[in-house]
Image 1 (cartoon, rainbow, N blue to C red):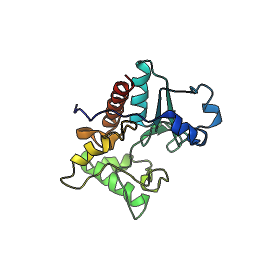
Image 2: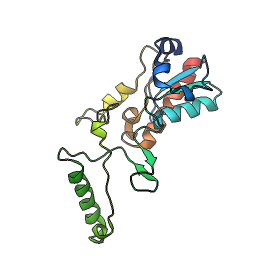
Image 3: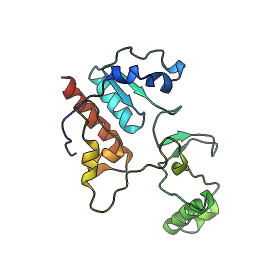
Length: 196
């Protein structure tokens, strides 16, 4: 995997002093939160979880802040939509005409791959509405042709204090969950070097 630039560190004192932990942590989730963690991670998606696991394996105390009421970022499993566990993806299909049009498009693509019997067995479709998500507004790691170097720039630390990870900062592994996880581990390695 590609190497990234020099490490930097987000200070926990600045973030904690701003009151962000109070706003982002429900009171029941704060029971075992270290008062003075070595590292603070913003976001409990694949990159944040990957970074936290690597840092904890190295003996560092970690606090992960997540704005949502769940972990896992854009990809998660829920059981209410279809009555069984269902893995939501990262909303690859968007439609200005509404979810029915997007679902029909996806069903047509499946039908083209496996034949018309797919439509006969189709029960229900759902669209995650990623573009309407108030925490991301549909953000996704798409680049203009020729702008691949922007991913490396995005992954560069700020002032040797703030590290970035996520599928958009995963170099050649962009747009995949594995890339997000890898970028979290890469950022954790940079944090470890900065902490000494």
